[in-house]
Amino acid sequence: MAGAGEVVERHGRPQAPAPPGHGGYGLAELYDRHRLFHVRLALLLVDDRETAEDVVQDAFASLQRKFGDRVEDVGHELAYLRAAVVNAARSALRRRRTAARHVPPHSVAAASAEVAFMESEERRQVALALRRLPSRQREVVVLRYWAGLSEAEIAATMGIAAGTVKSTAAKALAALKQAMEGQ
Amino acid sequence: MIRHNEDTFEQLLTATLHDLAGSVQEHELRPGRPGRLPVAAAPRPVRRRAMPLAVAASVAAVALGGVFAIQSWRDDPSGDSGRPGSLGLPTTSASPRPDGTAESLPDTSGTRRPGTETAAPPLVGTMVNDVEARVSYMLPPGWTVMPESSDPDMSLTTGGTAGPEWLPDVVGRPADRAIFYVATVGPAALEGFGGVRESAKALTNIIPCPDEYNGRMVEDTKATKVDGHDAWYSEAECVLPETEGPPLRIRATLIDTGGDAVVVTGGASAPTRLAEIERITKSIRIQ
Image (tube, rainbow over all chains, first blue to last red):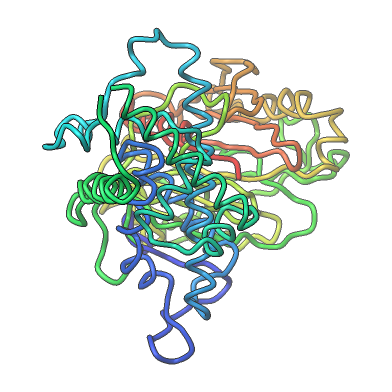
């Protein structure tokens, strides 16, 4: 019985999860190992946890559509997943901006709980300044300073040139510092 | 005014990002299942039979013993096997199996596209990802993904409140049963009816239950939106013999996706089940 809550794969025939160490492992294991990281990444891009989880859910669904349930090249698939999360987060922000045009201004500026409860006032200000960065600058900052990716990896994730990563990062830092100095 | 040199600012930025990211812990995420994709987030591919032309169009009735009979709607609208009220559409029926199981069966809050209607409360349940129909939706707890149809003319993903071994005497009141499914309407059928909107009207005409079930339309082809796409919604109800409680309501929505149109149909009697069907429909995401 395919009970609600169970996972039933329907690709024409049953697929046993691939064991680790035999040319790859299953998507479920990839999910277990990397979900939290990607939810955190998404959270830094979209600010709220629910949206972040939705973003990661969509990204895993996209990963599965593209590669199926067996992970053959972990590095390649994680790179795809990371890019999918960044893209989905960008889409979520775009939708949010569209929605924000239709709600009273005072209701969209509230800080998230995570920001509100930060102990350091300085960090709280940085967090608020981050939220005001344009999407692309924010993505570069998060991928560079939180995920620790190289310029080349960031470029691949965002689908931009390495040179653009560098210039965008510089602009983002300048904007953040300016915002902080204006506090 | 706060001033920073390069190093300390980058350190501050890194520390801030780690603070923010660290606010999410594993145990706070939606519940998962060890070694498996979590219930709430697992992409769930459902393969649909590669079939020539046919497309399912409506759940016709909850049959005696609580088993659903399903009509299918062929791409060729010119056939002559239609049933009363079907505009002569050729249909095939999946009869209840002798053991009382459903013969074939039907079945996305994703985040959301521009134009998506008001977000429904998040569903916790099973996410169904219909790869071929390019549709995903969430089935709430208590719903079961049904087996694929054995009818080669059916192209369905299905959700229901009972599994394939569903026996009338072990599943509670018939009035508490429900079904939901997704099917597609190919270009040939759409063209045959003169377009998506016209197909929706044709669908309306085959939804009502047969005369003997006192079928009647409750909502007649109303424009709506599903995940930002134009859609047409209709609702019918009928009184099934030997069942108690409210009449069976059948809700069908035809969604214009720009390619194959998607038909979403749900049927239930109990208000709680009808509300669940509405929530499932709101969770639909066109991929």
